[in-house]
Length: 244
Ligand SMILES: Nc1ncnc2c1ncn2[C@@H]1O[C@H](COP(=O)(O)OP(=O)(O)O)[C@@H](O)[C@H]1O
Ligand SMILES: [Mg+2]
Image: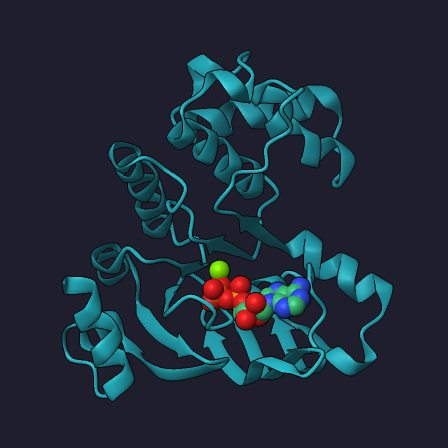
């Protein structure tokens, strides 16, 4: 399982993550919803060590880390074992779709080129983009680019895949193809933590939903319960405001 314990992060005097604890079982999908500025992106970035939290503990499988005593090799281990998909794709624009997918295998995992290519072709089938393998990202739609980004993260076999508003930059008609892919991964028991504003999707795909506000997880529970029947007033207000 993946366990966050008492995670704390401030930028100067601004406390952005205040004592967050969260357990995610392997194979589970957990979504985080909440207003802009709540600290959702920062939390994901701390899990992936793109940002280093100030305090707390992390456990991924048998690997325990006390953030205060984190070494360079801990950070490397975390980055290798967690994957991140961003709102803005961040593909390598000077590389083809296939090269985007093989890059991590070759550079990070030191897989031989031939082997990497074989695996990447399989991955492209999985994200339904095999016919685009020799295209450059700029010739793809946003939805296709995001599916490449998902394939690129997935091929490194992360113990958890983190999504930061994966559909927020997409034109409305392209949102669905990305959600369908994430739903398929959920069906394959890929462990995922998803920050999203797509409330119906969150309800549909997640085992659990967390509502986050002002650096704290205010409410957490089974997806249907939190979204259909929130107990906390702030969760209620947030969900009500989305309906209007
Ligand atoms: N690198 C940073 N330096 C200073 N403040 C930051 C930094 N990153 C985020 N913040 C601040 O932390 C708060 C939470 O941001 P963020 O995690 O992006 O929230 P969310 O993703 O929920 O919208 C915001 O007030 C934001 O301005
Ligand atoms: Mg954010």
